[in-house]
Length: 488
Image 1 (spheres, rainbow, N blue to C red):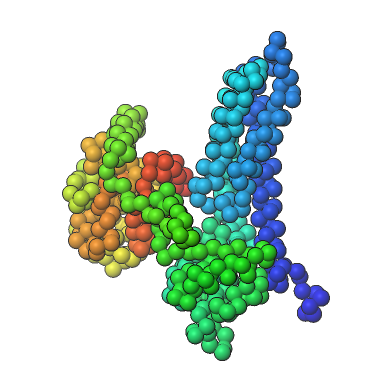
Image 2 (cartoon, rainbow, N blue to C red):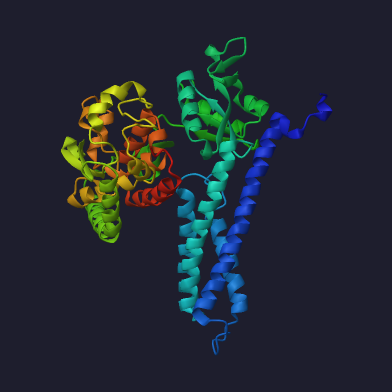
């Protein structure tokens, strides 16, 4: 194929241009979606406040007020950088900016209306802002899911990343980025220290080495990268990094720094410039205090309400289990909770009564790594038990454990004493908080996760828990249960 017939997107520069074009397409689509949502919000506010008739005697033409409110709202979203492609599609910052832009506009309109004595219905504004803010967050959640699917399939929706650093740190960063492809970072090449660059082409795993530290901008341009991710290296001094930033100016290539510290959530990180250095302050995890008391109160209140509402269903499940197979309805198993204290966790029985005795015979058929035993077609599971496990209904009696204070609604998976006996120092940090009925492991694949990934998610929760994160996990649990992901 001659150069004249090569498709533009197949060249490095064309790949970067195509990726940027798709990012701009997503931003334009998001702008159109926000416009529709806000238009519906103001119409909803008008109809709920006034009905189908024009309000009499107000002196305000809502035909002009409504479009003006939509335009002001879109401008507020733009000013708060809610369309910045660096925050779209990953993390909570996108949602925080949307809510902040909406609340700030609402506050500005309230103050302006009071000072100027504008005759605009407060009920209309309140309904419009409530519906619009909720609609914006919901719409962006849906758009994000579509973007995640597109990024996971590839096809140019992700940023093309050139990774720079020592070999060990490059491999670690590549593994981290590929663990979550929906985040939108596709590694296309690497630059390593000059001394390690061999005269023949090299690869780090399946990542091609495209250059050394001396020509990072040229290497990025050669492979069509739109992002240079710098990880740790003794040769990348502060002066060299500053010059790299200067070299990338005007090239449409972003520079990001990947610190060695990982699995720390944004609220615990604060950047403060000191003597020209951007020092990163990392707050210690919070294992006690007022927020923990609030978490405990919320846990008990919600578990009591859930037990009360679900009691007819629980009785029906108990009857079906009793009719299906011999044995007790409730299975009580010793697990380890906060601080290493043992307690009895309650579950609906889903296995035959001699399941523990049969475990030794099935040990060789374990389908997971690490310390847990999981088997997709476990012969010990009863007919009703298979249905209960598929929909996680067998775990509903654990609401009693939450009510008694042994567990939390959200937390790490409650381990067996035999597992805890083999914990090392890092894994033992799971015991610093109460185990949960659900958690990051539940909404990220459950039994489909490797032992390493399950532990990583549990430790991430321990270090970075928050009430807002708990509510998000509870919401995602509904989708995980309905989708039956990793349930067996």
